[in-house]
Every structure is written in structure tokens, then in C-alpha cells.
Length: 241
Image 1 (cartoon, rainbow, N blue to C red):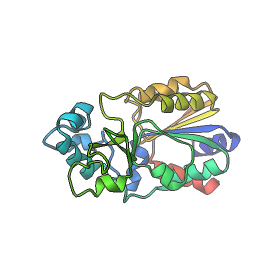
Image 2: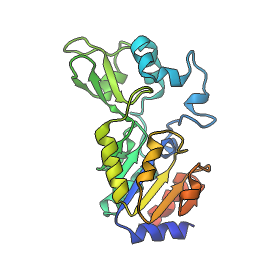
Image 3: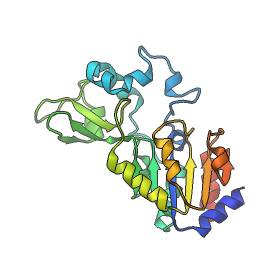
């Protein structure tokens, strides 16, 4: 199956990569739904509640305690998957990366065309005057709740919280590149989160590839399924390109 994967990549110059939390776990960033993920850790409130828009508005201090403790990705580095995707983009094979992650590691690895469905910790805006703030200001702020230096408004990370919709432009761009792709590689995601998982329905190309440690609900749709670690798979890809 690795030989088949390599052949598909070599034969195409129009590949789109769609990745989930599993892409970043090998950098040390915890995912959400595995047995060691954030959703299975014990907090005063459930993580799903703390990452909701309502919670951000009504319990801003508790939100930021959790956010700063668990979602600070600044010290993490790209792993082999991020690096190989950047390498394949340079070679003209990968046309776009679509990610459910907010850690910015694809850009840190050098990828240029990245659509972040759930936003990024690297962008933060004042809820009043919309002034931009980088992640260091938010994560290193002495106050638990970061406030705008211009107007004193509360700063909100540009991440999509529960109860919030995805960015229309990013969704449109994602649909466009998926619908135009010859090959769609989906990796490191359980494909259970909607609407992100629904984007796959727009793929009309020739080869759908699923790479994940565990089975997904859409394995039967794929032309190639690899149940293995992304690190192992992308190391093999790296050796061929």
C-alpha cells in the first residue's frame, strides 16, 4: 500500500491535503478525542463547554485559564508530516493544505497555501476596536484576560469556538481546491466533526486517500486506506521525494 501511495503522489501535480489533530500529535500537541486527549481530562468544566462562545462571554477568566494552559502551541515545532507537505508544495504537487488545527505548524514548516478551518492562535483581535495582537501578547500577558492597549477591550483569539460558524471565505476556498483536485489525502482526523467532514463530498477527483491510526466512518469511500502513524507514513514519502 505504501508503494501505491508513492505512485499516486508521483503521478499527480494537483493534490490537496486535509488534516486533523493527528497531524500535530507527533509534535507533542494533544488531540481532543483520544484516550489521552483534552476531552478525557478532568477539569472544573467540560472542555467542550470551556471552548464555547457562551463560555468565553460569560466566564472569560476561566476560558483564558484553560486556553493558555492547554492551547499554547508556540513552543512546539513542525514534525515530519508538516515538513513533507511543505516539500511537496515546493515541488508543485500539493496545491493546498486544509487543516482543522489552530497551532500554526503548517506555516511554521513553510507551507504557503493553508486554509485554517478553525482559525489560529497566531491571530487575536480586540472585541471592541478589532486591533490585531500576536500570540505572544495573549499567552504571555500578566493578566489572565488580555486587554487591548488602545481601548481596553477584551482580546479574543481568532479561533472558531463551539456555537460559532466557520469563516465563509476559508470554507469557499477549501471547497474550491477540493473540487478541483485530482488527489485528496485526508490524514489524522476521525472525520466526525461537521461541517469540516462534509467538505469531502465536494471531491470529484480520481484518488481519495485516508491515513489514520484508527478506522473512520468514510473508509469505504476511499481508494486507499492506511491505518498507521503519520510519522511512519510521511517518513516513507520523504524518502521518495
